[in-house]
Image (cartoon, rainbow, N blue to C red; front, side, top):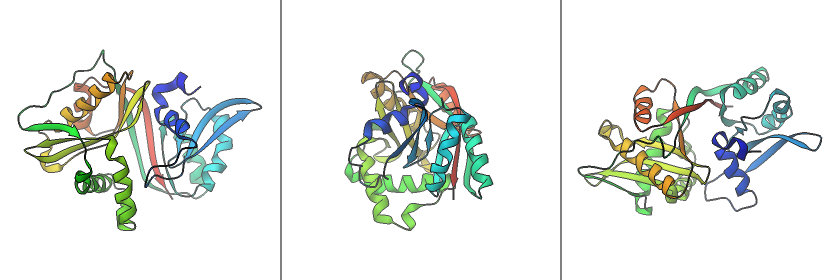
Length: 262
């Protein structure tokens, strides 16, 4: 079922595959739920570590999942906008309040449409290393602040460092004159597609082409590994990012809504 809608379900597919495995350091407990009509599975949702809804869910399938979401307490939902609209209508009536609420666009590129950039000058693209951890922690915190989200480092610095440390093998960095200026994480790596998250460029090095080179490098790795496409999400209204990804060949395929709620 999820594979039939793979482009919209990469994260859910990855979560399903991880069921029963030990979680990485700093990663939250994984919890999935299914909506059924008798013995027929209508759709799937992840409840933890974040709330992710199968775009194929309809209103009837979404309804029995809402009590489970309520029991999960505070959380983050990022899914197809229409479904999140329905979910949030119910949660808001129950007194939940948003700490962050924004529209995003899921965009994808495949080998036939990609217009990727090569590194030039003093740029170097490489996998992240453990010794990059202080820079990666800084980038993760700065990205959260730019999004207006709470910084978990303030209450649990060691836990936050463990979480970033666990993601190092998924990270690609771009350096300029030996200084890290860009990072992106390939958090899902499947034959159906790779999902890029945590894309961040240091402010002092923006508009220098690092993001175009870094995203291009991750896409090339995905295509060499046999992935059908690579995808990411961009906040609606972020025109520089929209232009960047369009110039690399990314095309929109789904509207998303992200809500951090308490």
